[in-house]
Length: 191
Image (cartoon, rainbow, N blue to C red; front, side, top):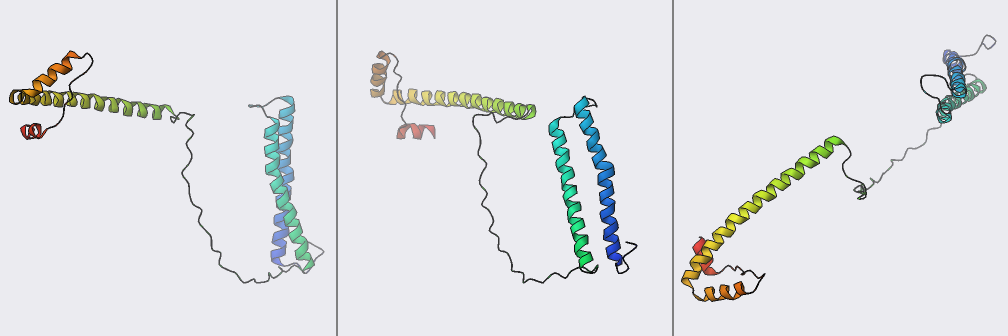
């Protein structure tokens, strides 16, 4: 930088920035990586450092190394262009028409249980209990309705003696219950 007289202020800033990033990478990240390698080999530290951890850390450092390579290439292009930013040719920008992807419903794996946590399990249990209570209420409601219908049938038997003989025939066959049919008379009596 001392030998070059035609460097612009922007050029000086970019040179300093690239040098600073390089020093940080060498003095901090590489030392940290070296310490992790020692921890892995000697099995020391608060947590065990695995080879996979080293690979992940190196991948992160490698992105910074690639960024520095691009920074140095940019400085070389600036130097070749007498420390002036090369003008980018203006291209005609065409609007991009994007098609929105159609969202599909996620597939549910029926082999795995739908409950993923204890709280969800408790909620599901509460829902099941509520359903059972409703079923019991519905059964008791059905029993009340059956009693009402039986009372109506009794009144119908008094009015129609033929229905008595049908009931006697069905009672003689074990396991057969009389079939209750709604007749216009039952509907009228119910109203």
